[in-house]
Length: 331
Image (cartoon, rainbow, N blue to C red; front, side, top):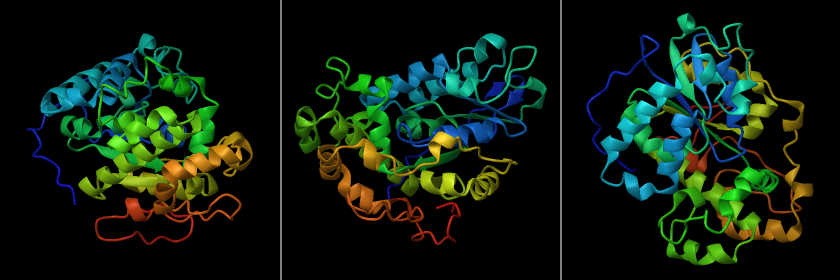
């Protein structure tokens, strides 16, 4: 078990005239379904959830892409993150306009131009991209925070990333800082073997490496935090049984989450089979096949998919989770 370092003394953050208590942060690889959890929390009473506020994105991507700047500066990184969220969680019309589109579309803004009534806020949250790479600093910044992870089949994630120009842009020459930043969790590069392989990989292989890196990051976080502070959902089970997922999410965050809405275009779990070529599937298998099977996506191309509860790398420290079919364990 990886022990977490000693935490700094608690810091009381006040936003909109209220103390920030047990904020909820949502993690996942790109296109893993964090938006499903985000929308559910954003529509929950008393919650103010943001996605992609500039003050947060600037800090998160800086820390994610250059993790070396955090080394030996844990308390400083926590302070910077805390300041970023203090700004991001301010309720004002201009603030709502700077969130990412998926956040703006999650709720209807009031006549005042805000997504939430400031007087109703009791809890805060965020589901900005790349938060997983700042997890340690977030725990330092908010020791009482709750963390929600969501994992999805790496082949589906890779297929979705391949159709997303914003994600592919991270692979461009001059953007991918894999030579001068090592190890590089953002790109999934953890060993010299990974770094040597990177230039030879196609976009599909690089997407798989990013997914693999996020899975490793989530597994390490699972080993460091207790079940009362972190839970892991599986995308395929969330879209199969959204009511059960909403109930489990409610229990974990200790607040009423009425429903998880699954858009029609997100209900197909096997689209990657027709979207990925045999060559792409073979490269994904080479890069991340072991991790796919360790988190329950054990079928090889041409076999029947087996989606099991989140066990293996995401099992609780007391052993693999035991859940009824479709349920979401706080593993």
